[in-house]
Length: 122
Image (cartoon, rainbow, N blue to C red; front, side, top):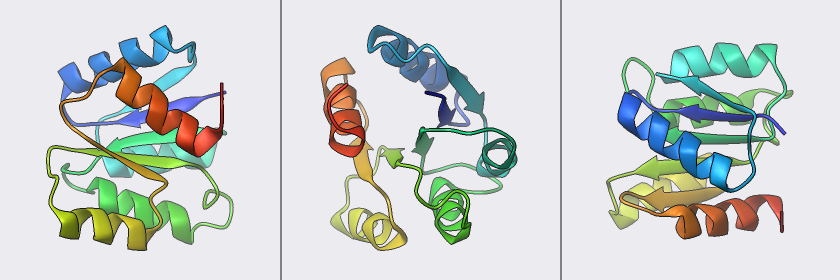
């Protein structure tokens, strides 16, 4: 399965990619903003998107809304990663159709649990 991780912070991309490799997800692509991610999603089949919330020019929330509007993409599991744990942000993301939500910092066990909750056991 192909996984797309989206974050404008190179260190975070590396951390998530390494955690995914530990969890036996070797096919990981990276995008540094929502616009690039959307183009990649339209060109290749992905089974999971893990996206940061705070990015420019297109945020993770805007990316999520675009994915959910797209007939071809709308069923892809989408996990949002953010440093914001405010309840209203969780509610906004849920209303936009997020599959799950991770608050930074997190570890491999947290990531594994969130992925399992959206993909089933792996």
